[in-house]
Amino acid sequence: MDWQGQKLAEQIMQIMLLVFAVTAFVAGYVLGSFQMMVLVYAGGVTLTGLITIPNWPFFNRHPLNWLDPSEAEKHPKPQVTVISKKKGSKKTIEPAHRLDPSLPTANLVTLAR
Image 1: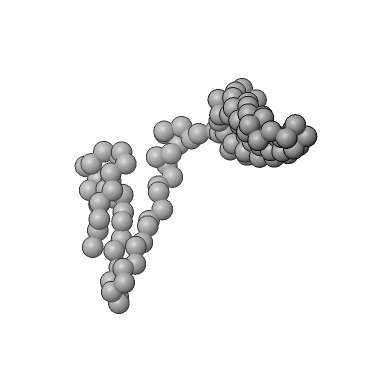
Image 2: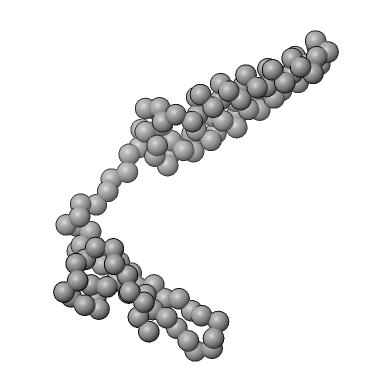
């Protein structure tokens, strides 16, 4: 499920739950039955779950385009700086291949001081 699909699923879920809550309240009030209200709402929650939880094709209309591995190696990851609470103390996390070129360029990270 892509990002827009997640947003759509959440919007559908919120609308359906609201509609079923109002419908359940009205049905329970008109019939004078708390049990009927709970059953209508439980059915609505179940139907909402069946519609919004599975990864249906209409939730995948905007797929993400990932970089090729060869293209990703051309653009190095940015350096991350972690500032500790001690005054003047900085720790820098750098990718391991910058520290030791003999290491593979996989996701190895070393704490540099």
